[in-house]
Amino acid sequence: PTTIAALARAELVRPQSMRTTVGTLEEQGVLARSAHPTDGRQVVFALTEAGRASLAELRRAKYDWLAEPTRP
Image (cartoon, rainbow, N blue to C red; front, side, top):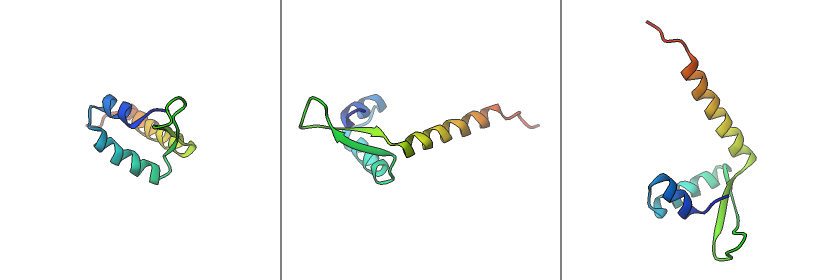
């Protein structure tokens, strides 16, 4: 679980931009919000089970694509 600010720093984008992205992912059921464990003013976001499944599927698809032999 992490905050929007931490995600924005990790992705080198502004928090406002990350907020839009996180909002969309939350609407899709990929992320879920919960109260920050030590700071009641903040919320944290974490992957849902559906989000974990989507991430695993995406990683598998990338791996399969990379593992494909090249065609002449």
